[in-house]
Image 1: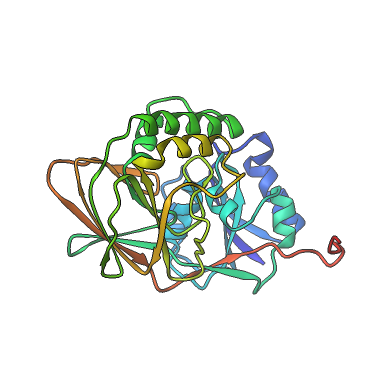
Image 2: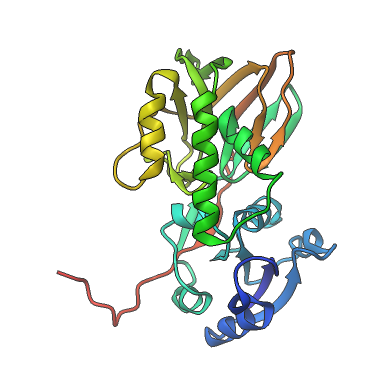
Length: 299
């Protein structure tokens, strides 16, 4: 099997450098055509068909591969090397490159619908994680100014910053419409998500499934601010204290707040802005690690 390996050489540790990953893939009998995310021809490389495409890096690298792959019938393998690894977490993937690659099987895939965001009448963009107005955009903007930490330290720092932002957040000037019905809430932040995890590895959208064509609308309400702050400290313990709805077509209208498309921030202003968010109908095919027959089910 031949693969196009799209690798972020600055992600992960020394054990995740180009040579180590290529050797791990050879262990699974995968021959590699290599391209670095730092090269100018990454986009062009993703236009050419191959047996599989492998995205090795953080959520930014994986999201780039997802949104720029020309032929969506080509399976995508994920090697998560970042800090949050929200995409891999959401798909239940964890392990070293060698462990993951040896568990890939042709045909053992999970459908993944990208998120389509339409601005006005004709500007259309695709993203992997979702779109939001308010706190996640503010978090991305704030953290872009500081030096990034590694691994768990980066996640902890992100959660501390989000808690500080949450403490001082004001109500948004916002309108949300879900499948033709107004969703009336006093919100200080809203995100439309296609995967459960977002931001600093927070499982905000427990019902999200990138394999269906529904999106999860997650709202932070002013009334539950204190509960949210406590939940962020231990987000694996309970479901988040958020307002949540599911829908196929989400319209958001807002002003005086920044927005985000995955990890890209757009500055808000006094003029009203509007987007329509929905799933792209043609899914990607994500390779899902299969359990080896030698591994028995535990009692």
